[in-house]
Image (tube, rainbow, N blue to C red; front, side):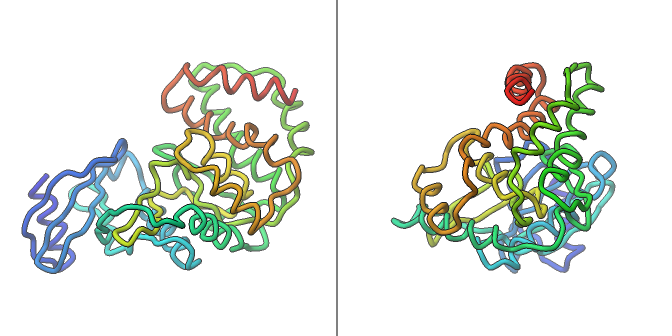
Amino acid sequence: MKAILKNIASQNNFNFIGCKPLSGGDINKVFLLKCEEGNYVVKINNASEFPGMFQAEAKGLQLLQATESFQIPKIIAVGVFQNHSYLMMEYLETGTPNSNFWKKFAENLATLHRTTQQNFGLDHDNYIGSLPQKNGFCSSASEFYITQRLEPQFKMASDKGFQFNNLEGFFKNISVEIPNEPPSLIHGDLWNGNYMVSETGETVLIDPAVAFAPREMDIAMMKLFGGFSEEVFLAYNAIFQLSEGWKERVPLWQLYYILVHLNLFGLGYLHKVEACISKYS
């Protein structure tokens, strides 16, 4: 791997000094690349197994950066070397949270979610973890959530042998539960492993699965695995009030992420999927 990283540095006109593995990569191998010009993070995967993954990730990071909300690592390069795709980014030192960390997190999230466009979706598909994520344009939140989020994951699960009853009725019922809000630019995979704290105590977002989508999806994902202070939800709602009944809808939005985990990790997530279908059937 050292030879590959040395070639990546050379390909981008950097003078290689050394490298070492970094933690955090389930799908990709992640390295600290030390060059005379500075330190960089390089993510590497198989180009044929995950086509276009890093191009989509780079676009997502640039979309987030353009909102001037959270701090986002700068993209240095995206490319391929000997069937290894790579994404090269600036390396950010980590630190400890500021005293107003969660309030600032809420402000940044509200700024991000106020970024909108006419339709739900995106001009390109991307990934959620290692799974393809469709982003076809839709005119309503319910159409987007059902056709671009739930249906592809249910199909994938069915292809793996899982069976679900009365999905048609389930989709019909949830379509009236979903509030008719404008699209928001969301991070799309906002669990506690996809943010870090910078050297100056600010939030840095990484590993996005962006789209213009219902903003409650980010809120629901933040609540799925924990790691976020209740203060952030109170502050966010004070800044950019969520539609009535948002707390009751959290499990509905979490269904997408649970389906993703079902398709990635198997049977252990089936009960939660079935419970959500049952609730709305």
